[in-house]
Length: 246
Image (cartoon, helix red, strand yellow):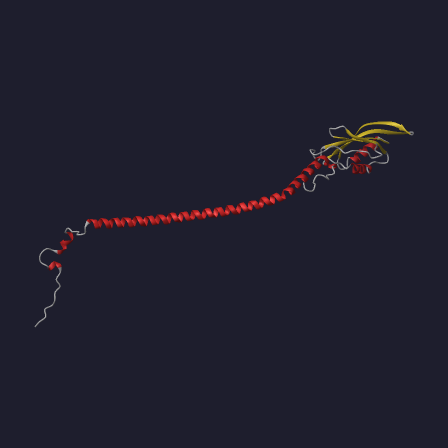
């Protein structure tokens, strides 16, 4: 007995219609249309539910962020208001100090306005005495503030003089007062030398004599004279220029 070799039979070997044509043949769906519609509706409902869940998650996330932002803003506002209240409390406590400083500053301004043009005439007379030679005698000195009438007229022997007016608007070389001297000298040459000497004093400029007249005194010829000198802001004491607290 012999064994014949097995052979594989394919669809193409089956007699009749070619099975390859079955794929293009019409199909018959035996499932009722109601079930298909129900499944389609279920799929639509699931999609809508998933979309709603996604929207809810997105809305919840946005709301949570907004809620957190509002809470943070409220906390910051509360902190700022607390700090503002603390600062206002400190300002209220310091109000009397500020008022005191303002009063001091105002007082300093009044003092500067009233005494800013002070000239220490005692010092001026002392410096003047060092310039007078033995052959020149002063009999009278008058100080006239710029733009005003004479402030004081007195004997030079007693050192009587008065301060000039305020010089707040004066420049370093402007005149704040004029001093008029009356005296007697042995000669006009002595008068000129003395005027040159006082012209070198700080704050004194333009020294000159305006009149002179010779006369006999105790058998000697002497000269009576009238001289003037301009007093500038360099003669100011400056004691009230920079006050404490101004």
